Amino acid sequence: MSDFELQKRLFNNFLRTEKSLSENSIQSYNFDIDRFFVYVNDVKLVDSIKKIDEKIVSDYIGYLRKTETKRGNKYSEKSINRFISSLKSFFNFLLSENVIKNNPFENIDTPKTSKVLPTVLSINEVEEMLKVPDVKDRLGLRDKAILETMYASGLRVSELINLEISNIFFEEGFVRIIGKGSKERIVPIGRSALKYITKYIKESREFLKNSRSENYLFLNFRGSKLSRMAIWDIVRKYCKQAKIAKEIHPHTLRHSFATHLLEGGADIRIIQEMLGHSDISTTQIYTHIDIEYLIEVHKSFHPRA
Image 1 (tube, rainbow, N blue to C red):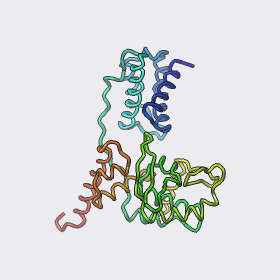
Image 2 (tube, rainbow, N blue to C red):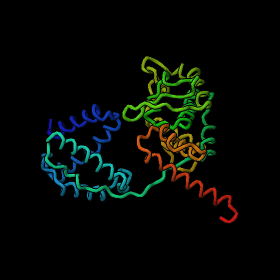
Image 3 (cartoon, one colour):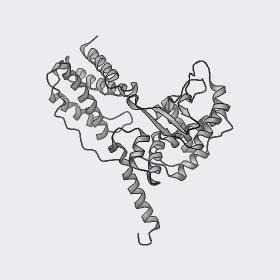
Image 4 (tube, rainbow, N blue to C red):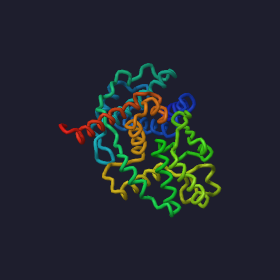
């Protein structure tokens, strides 16, 4: 095993045990780290972590800015920020373990990024999308329950696919979620979502489940829990059928959940709790969306706007 592979494995253990990060987050770190070391080994011909300096790091960031993604686009400043953040954390770990004497990323500033507001569906668009699934079909009923649950509770995709039946409290009207960093939170869930979850469990899940199903709520046609990509496909499929002309992904329903709560007068800190954000600044992006909404309302209804 190379020195790099050994240190990456130790770093993974650190993220898993000390930081309590999910496997998805750890994979994201590994992607960024692996990409950097391919460049270091193949372009800079550096064979030791200890030989990496600030010049190599600066050259790498310049290389990223010129590189095209698989989609043919240039990396955004947001993506480059993520690469820098991941690598800075990795080299800080190496510094703490006395593997290196200086962190070559220490003086590297992350580029300033413009705040991009997430795509949000209007309440009418959500209603149109929720009308589309055929609840007489087993998989259509499952999809209806999925969409209702995502919009009712603002769950992340990883939280949705790992949701277990035992964590749904039907009488009390809430779900127990194990979120990022294994943090637990309680999120209310509306009557409509509970209605379709109950119907799905009785009329669909009962026929989908098998020995591999465990206690997962939402299952694929093989009886296993759904993948992240399956949720992505479900959301896009019904948005397309509802003729919604927006760039949609599963997180759009989470954004819509938060925005509609804010528009309805909910307190930002309550929304923060329901979304599972550890930092209020993450939630505050929705206040910007709310301002955009207010401006649109003013333009539409004020006689002199």
